[in-house]
Length: 221
Ligand code: AP5
Ligand code: MG
Image (cartoon, rainbow, N blue to C red):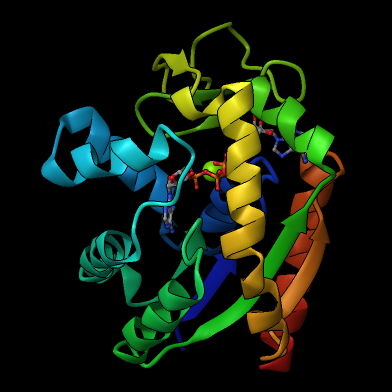
């Protein structure tokens, strides 16, 4: 049976950081809607141009654009065995669309780890985040510093600060999360597949907690 895991949580909670750990551990693709948008912006595709106008303001990209993009990603064969989804779905309409897509593989959303941390921690994390240009590897100037300033430890590429990590945009992203994405907490809780994870702990402790929850879930299935 394929395994599909959806990481839910506010900006800066650690979704991307933990998605990379889980993807490596389970040998599954890491599908980050934000990373796919940023790659399209970098290469100047039409979709990237549309997405940029929303991302730069901290708004969600419209559902039709986002769902079509994820549908395209799911058309690739590596998603058949499962995936770690990071940043998608983010609205109830996207969650419904995801269910329909997974049905096609004979799968469903198996578990939704909901990672949280206090707002002031989220802001501090995003202000100090450095992201790798080549593959989106994630660092923090204090909490997870690269060995060499400005250089990715994993692939040697340049580290940059995301445009949407400016303080005022971060505040708006958090508001948008509360209004448009937080309803998914109850959506998945009602299905009995939400697992609350305290994201305000060292990165390794959060990963250990996630692995424990995932193993327990696998045993129950
Ligand atoms: P996206 O790229 O998904 O951004 P986000 O959801 O705002 O989340 P972040 O990537 O900012 O945070 P994260 O939880 O991944 O944290 P990270 O691991 O990096 O989306 C960007 C934009 O694209 C959206 O605003 C929207 O416009 C658009 N978009 C994307 N998906 C969309 C969708 N489905 N629908 C519509 N629009 C969409 O960690 C943050 C920092 O903290 C790092 O520096 C890290 O090193 C550090 N850190 C992580 N964990 C810890 C820890 N435990 N302790 C200390 N530091 C930690
Ligand atoms: Mg992320």
